[in-house]
Image 1 (cartoon, rainbow, N blue to C red):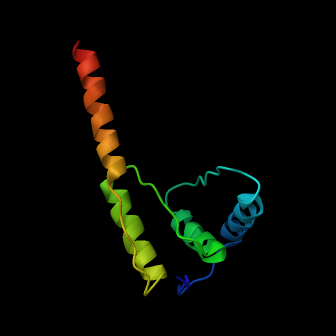
Image 2: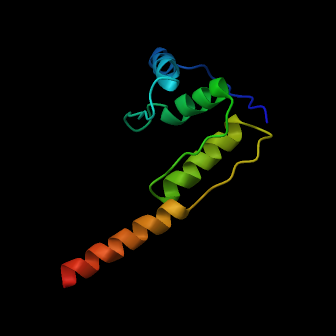
Length: 106
């Protein structure tokens, strides 16, 4: 499967720097975290990173709203690629909250 990024805009200098740093650390580190304020273009950075790495990628979202947003954005950026959403994370979070409530009640 070949990823082909299609976007009507270019990366900002900060986004380019983030992609370069993540790529440099890709082979050397087990885990990396991309942090940024709302609207800073984290999804576009992830898309550019996926495009550079050319490997299927698991993106974990903490709620359905964010998962739907990511799906919509990435579907537009990677046209012609089948995207799949896994809601297992939502189930785990829901179960954790139920357990916390039960502990609090007891």
